[in-house]
Image 1 (cartoon, one colour):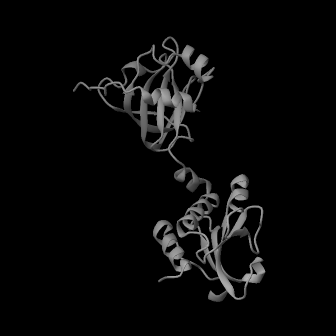
Image 2 (image 1 turned 90 degrees about the vertical axis):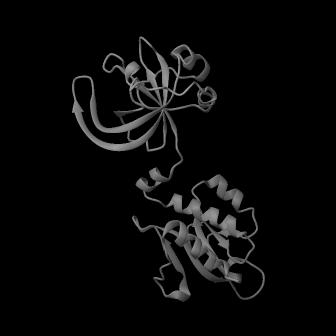
Length: 258
């Protein structure tokens, strides 16, 4: 049976395509790094039990991992086998025993958290879960009410915060003043250069129509009174309560004319 250390190395290699480095020799610890920013996300060592404040003689394999959430880190420290970081910043790192005290699945979950905590900004953006956005559309400048009449995918101005897979609710401004469309971002970061007195566009995205709402279902008055949305001047996140309401409604899928 493989030692947990070897199982951890295999997990990291399979999921993150990363193999251990030994900057001080194999006997003094293995470093696992991000390929882009070269930051460590794990340090595997063999440490004397006494140095960790543990009873008994001999040494034990451990892994140091970064945990950004201070409250969660404090909770973790209540678990047997998770200790203040050995030879690293104890405010942000923990030491996890690899002797079976902490189950392998939990160690892998903590490795994932450490990988995310030490990732570059670009990688963090790609790793984040899909989000939901309300995006304004001004009918004075674009005939959004007929944009999906013959196609289910259109190009739209993209905020840098929106990534592929995010849900985009198009809020059509006055005189409609209501959310009319639920879409998904299917392609992002399309270079585009346009500027006039009303609009500047540097990046476009492609959004696919998922559902169409009637103007009376999610008008601005309802957004304001029930969900605390007092203005839609740019892309903004969707409150959980509104998300549930929007997703609970399942109108018929749009039929497109050839």
